[in-house]
Length: 124
Image (cartoon, rainbow, N blue to C red; front, top):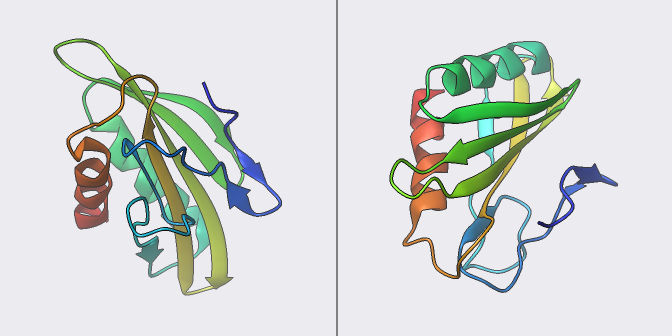
């Protein structure tokens, strides 16, 4: 498993496999827009927590002041995907949430990680 977390303001880079998306990726295949939350960091954090708590087969592994790591398990084969959120308060009324979602095993995820993050975006 890749080392996860935030290092010097950056989430871990995606590998060369197509089973990862990140708002900090430098290439088109892995890049996804960050989440934008109209409110402060604390409210953004609580909004993401609420979404995760309503989602099936999710375990929140790490909760830090500006970072969350959750594990999503697939229904059929119980594969684990690591999902990370890095919160950056741009102003009291805007928080950028950098995101990364990556499968632990396999090569392709058939777009599951991207769909998951877009679903979370739609719920914000």
